Length: 288
Image (cartoon, rainbow, N blue to C red; front, side, top):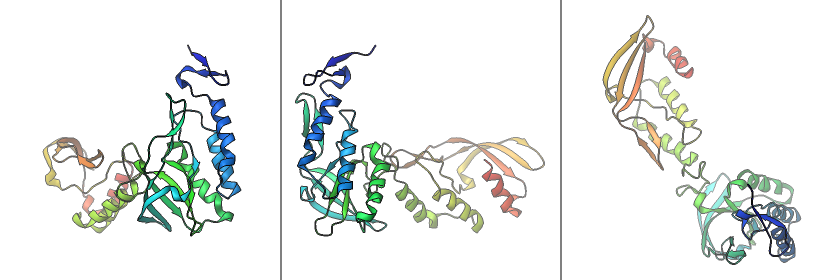
């Protein structure tokens, strides 16, 4: 059964889990505050206003126009394509709904944020900025928009907690702190530390590693044969031999970094004469 109570201000029914947070009152409050700020760009103003009016839970981020002078200790930390990325502290911090005060209060001063400076974005392509924000907005990764008063370039203000500590890109899977860009770079750097002895197979494995999708993706590898123990044949025909074995180190799995599950039970499928027909061997792998 759903339980409701009355808002103390407007007497509208509010769901009891919302406590004193009333959608009707919050929308009214945001609307009344629209005259107190502007980005200087009508399209951006309407976008921010629209985001504020769509808030429907007390835990949602209040998307804002954030004046550039509210940031300090601004330090360039990288480049993403043509965009420059900065680490900074937000003097006042974001708005949080505080139940005991029954209003939004800035409770996180000196909040660490990522400033993604979007270069060469002017009025005629503001849509590019807003589209990029829309892609990540629902994940509560973005606090708002700002603008460098000197260069006039617009800035996405991002939650640093959702950004990779190495490259400062947003995590591909933020709860697992998995960054696709960094993992791909790691695999590339590691290519020189292994080889199958066959260029075609090496290239195939490398492509498989570079095509990982997320932290759950299997890391396809070249595995030295002496890493298998207790090899036992369990089946055979004219084309293949099947064995069971224990993989001493085990496969890579993600736990805030890649680690191995040791003594992992695996099946080994030998394709007879496969060393003389590499293409057919790789086609067989691709079917799995």
